[in-house]
View (cartoon, rainbow, N blue to C red):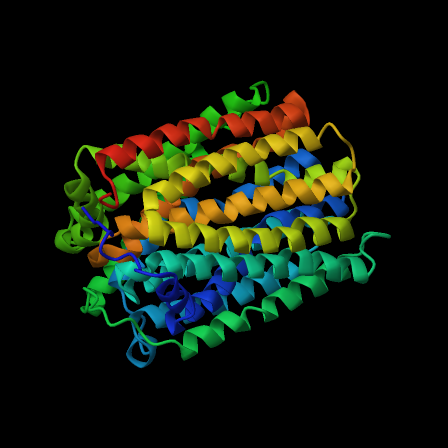
Length: 503
């Protein structure tokens, strides 16, 4: 079990020094690279879809395009175990993977830019899924790079600068994209060429991350990689076979009955996903019991990262995993419908860009630094509890806003409070996940944690539009606030069973 009492800075001067260190500034740039693609799959894309005439329920289903964030652990062992030919020798294991993932994100954004959801919604969906998959891959590597490139005493502060860079990127891909679209005339009439230009410009901003990758040093960590090329190929083929099994089972599963309500549909599709994942696991397990895939390599790649976590935390492991699984449920479920809510309340694109994104960015960065500093100085578990409380409470403000109409002053106040709480919660949570991760299985374990973090919230978020239809906006926001109450209990319980720090 890790403790961080001795690692906390002794003074505010030391705190400032850690925040302004070269490592922290590198994480600012890599955080920008990580945050840029996500809104191009979620809120910015939802505005594009609404303007293209896509129905609200279909728009919120597009949040599933980011489902790859919930399954990162499936291919993270490959990133831990397989070095990329040629590039790994020149750049190092982590930076080679990072550069390739960033180039793939650029390609996926440009592909999405070439589609028109008004006439080819399927291709837009394909592009969104590609952005989600490549972005999730980049996140695996950046998370591992952050943990491996600095000692535990710096992780809370790296989390703060990472969140700041992430949110600046979200301003760029959110408010920046919407401002640009409005300036080009997106308010007046739907023109797919406008959105093509927007996404092409966003693809260009990925050069920030590429530059950061090329200018950053490789972490001084020895990776236990599979050096045998045949073994590498077999591991990769086993992964592809598992993915094929997952896709096949998902497609063979019966379609969701239209007669089911939103919560019944959630349960049905959760069973569909769990069953498909189980089939993928059985495929990989079966291959590992044949000469096609060496059992020792499969065990080291897919089994040992998980057993290591269970061995270290024992009975507390399931409580920790439950906490990780629902910690961000309140803000993720609410966020899936936020832009649709703003539009239907009567705010225009320029107002959404200015108030939702710009003011929200300032509040989120402030919250991120506050969360990182408090986690670093006072302890991770305290920061975690405060963040969860603020995230749930801020959703009640949206319930009030929903009863007041297009009130700009109230919108600014609500957005500021919501983003301040979100920044605080995310920075504290990143520090918590980093502390749980073993340096031996960095990418795989952190990917598992962050996948669990997103899987349930993203699945529920896909039904947010249906829930709004059934309950109305005030009821929906109260419901999302109530989702945060079990989180507080789990933070307290996990803190008792497996404290990250000794008080």
